[in-house]
Image (tube, rainbow, N blue to C red; front, side, top):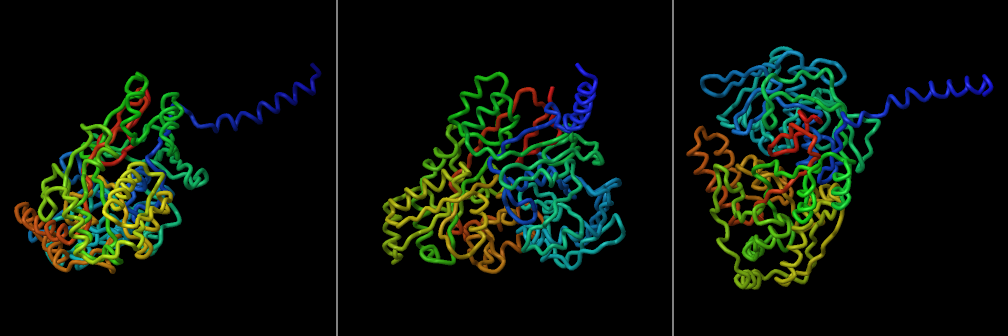
Length: 520
């Protein structure tokens, strides 16, 4: 071969070498198919748990809870509480840095808490009980309460959306009515903006500067060790595609699978199938209280009376062992479980009679906003479509993708009924559960029920200093919210996740925690 050709080939090979080196190492890359792929990357802006799960990789929290619901320090080194319980002093641990290399400061944390408190139900309750939240020095800030608030650490460590994630003060200055336009945290992984494809993929890479805590990882607490160099969250809404990709090893982890495909995976030794969330989810049927016909409490109660939870659970759980009928807004198996105010059983004829007595015009279309690409939520909507039709309503099922659904649900006009699921730990108290917010049109949560007595009792619950008082108050809140038809629980269910069997270190908990995973 002539010498010039050899030289050209050598040059070509040398030029190609950097491109090959830049290819992700598959062994150190985790490919995940979440139930849905969020397009909202701001952890303070939505209750979407797909946003929450992404945010846990990139951001960090001051406090975290373990599997005994005990608040433990995370970004904090320590906290101090005054004898009267009204002054809390928080000190950051050493070595905290944002992904641009700048140090995390108390100023950042104060700004982040203020922004989160403007969006989150429990955070808002804490901020309303506060007299001041101020910087003491670069690593120290102080919260002074103007009235007792017994849930400070529980608020700072809540594991469910909206999680009080910390971000730089310049980003936290973004008005809470707008999502941040830059994604930067201090967590174990960095967001890769240049590889982001909205609705298709989200990529994060290991943050080499992150300093994990020394304690073992338990739920969101302890040492978050980024053993994978890269995590790819991939949109893969078709279940058969998920199963095929997991079987061939194209992807490594599927967050949530319907029960009918589990036997296929359970026979495959290369795949592990398990339930990672011990509490599971609550199905939710939410009324828009601002517009007919559900501005009438009698109509809301009639639909609640007609609900047969077994129908909904069959649609979303698939296996009897994954399903549990539960009429408690605070979830079953939780300390505040109660059915006060709820219909004790399904009674379709009584529901029809109540609708006739209400005088509601059932010929008007009832718009159900329906996220067709979120199977766990969509199944609930289809059951309600049949139920409302059976009751005589004129049902308009409006299909859309999940991100459009969240946008539509946040608007007070244009819908009558919505469904969702939420993790039971996010529902277990009057301040954690956003659906028992009774503030109404201003300050309320999507659906906007208004009940001044519920709001008064929620403030009393926040001030309570012992479990017995909190239980008494929460029972009364539940009774009032149920009788007013805030929403109807559709039962409690768990769902299986699946991953390649060579993955080790999968964490259990109320969210999808993807640190500490390694391939062996």
